[in-house]
Image: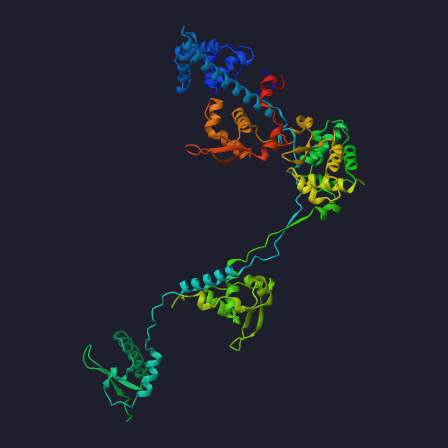
Length: 257
Length: 172
Length: 172
């Protein structure tokens, strides 16, 4: 085997050793080619019949030692057994059929052998990055000029629409603000109204009339009460409640004396 | 055939991805090789050619002769796109000019970064156009003639009307 | 000082890690330059040196001289060699392209493993080239320019003729 041949099983005489190394072959065709090479003749003149016998012997040997064989090995064995029977039959038509099949097999072996040689030829060439090396540190004189802007009106319009739509999408739901009557406002209103209403009227009379909802009225009542208590503390008015949960009444501050 | 050491040194410096230091060279050449004279011979071989042997940080390197660089240079134009935020801002200025920064932010529904304003200013697409007579007197922004030229517009009137663009105004 | 055209051609090819096509060279040199004689002069300048000018994949490339490989391999980091199955598959694709996977398997008499296809694809040596108009429309495979560059071929025509492969086994 020449040194440029791809690594593979060497051309050993077929026999037990070959049987044990079946796994080293890539398939039945690979083994057949190896056996043919063993004949040491031009592939065009190999004896197909002896090749068939050698293959069948190897398969038989493998079975004897109960080696698990993949289906394609057995399919090839069956086909070769058929081929052998054709070639040996005393029937001229059968022999012709067998010879045609043998030619096909020989051609396949030649094709494979050619491609093996082609692979060897390639492998023997100095390969870039293996035997020969290109410039390791290439220089690039290409200058990328990014100074220009790629602008077009459709892009501008897309941008405008995207901005407007997004802004619209960003408007969050805000519940309408409650107009709560603050203590400050209640204080101001109480002070302004003191003296304009008769003594001991209900605190509710001091609420602004504009308040609509019950919740606003209750909030206003609360702030007005706080404001009233504040004013009562300073003596500016008096508050009176005659029964629990009864109306709160507002009176003028007591006149001195 | 050139001197064997010279050939080896030449090949190594050529094939290396990084500058070749004296240690790598010494590793390659037999012990009896005189490194300095090999380097000197290599430099002489390339002197005046299109390629020069130069000494850079840490070792030797081939570089194309500096005087040839302008001839070898190939400029590839790769126009860049404006980032989305810049394009949107530009569009808003185009349609609402003159417009203040807070107004742009209000329309976009997002804050406007200084980098975006700067990029548009740098590209000459927008320019300040006076100040708004309102508290703080904010700058008013408008598009420039360069803006029209870049977009191939003869005037702002070439832009589609807002009504045609926003057939179904959002938020309405 | 060398001839100016020679220097320019040298610099251009030297600067590039990939083969430089004749068009790029013609673009660089003035119209009156005789490309062939410039290339011949450049080849002569590098003949016998550690770096050689070769014609691969339809272009010019500088490469280290093949005879220096054993010495260089010791100091340069190498990618893994392709295994036998991959080399055979590559040879079959090179000679039968465009070819389908079942056709490759038929010729090899063995199934094609995914690892083999992956290794060839990863090395950029093969590429899909359309689909065969037959049942199942299997992908057709072909070799790439990188295949030519890897094996130092200027074109597929540099491959030995099939007949010659059997008569004259290489290295025998």
